[in-house]
Amino acid sequence: MEAIPEENEVVGAVSQSRYVQIVAELRGVTGQETEGQFTIGDRALEVEPMRPCDGQAMDTSRPVAHSLVQLARDVGLPVTTILQARWTASRWPADQRRKTESFTVHRLLAGIDDDEERFAAIDELPEGKTHWTIDDTAQRIRVQGIAPAAPQETTTAVTPRPGSLILPPR
Image 1 (cartoon, rainbow, N blue to C red):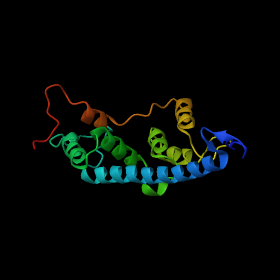
Image 2 (cartoon, rainbow, N blue to C red; image 1 turned 90 degrees about the vertical axis):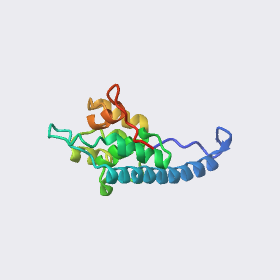
Image 3 (tube, rainbow, N blue to C red; image 1 turned 135 degrees about the vertical axis):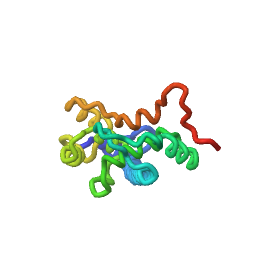
Image 4 (cartoon, one colour; image 1 turned 90 degrees about the horizontal axis):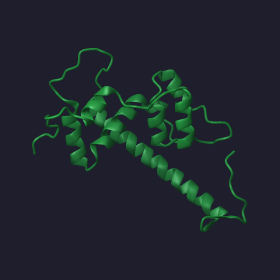
C-alpha cells in the first residue's frame, strides 16, 4: 500500500487530511483528462484510420500528415498531441481502457505489441500499489525490453522528407 502520512503530519503546506482530499480531486481530474485524450485519439482515428505497417502496400496518394495537421490546427493542438492520442487510442479499444489509469500509462503500455499481454499488463499492478505510476510503468516496459514508440507511419508524419510540404494550403 502506498504510504499516506499520519494525520498530524503535513505534506508541503497542507495537512494530511487536506492532502488526501487533493489527491482524490486530482485523480478525478486525471480521469477526465484521460477520457479527453482518448476522445481526441478516437476522433483522429475517425478522420484518419491507422494504416498497415506490416509490409502491406499503403495508399501513399493521401499523406496522413495533411488531414491530421489540419485537425490539429483546427482544434488548436500540437500535431504531436493528435498523433500520440491517435496511436494510443488505436492500441486500446474502449472496453480495455482503465479509467483509474492515466493516459500516459496507457500510452507507455501501448508499446507492448501483443494485444493480450498489453491488456493484461494494465491490470497487473505492481506489488502493494493501487494504481500505476509513470515510474512503475516505465520499469515494466524496460524489464520487457520494449521501447515504446509509435509505428513508422506516425514517425513519418511528424518527420517529413526534406523539401516536402506537410501543411495543407489555407
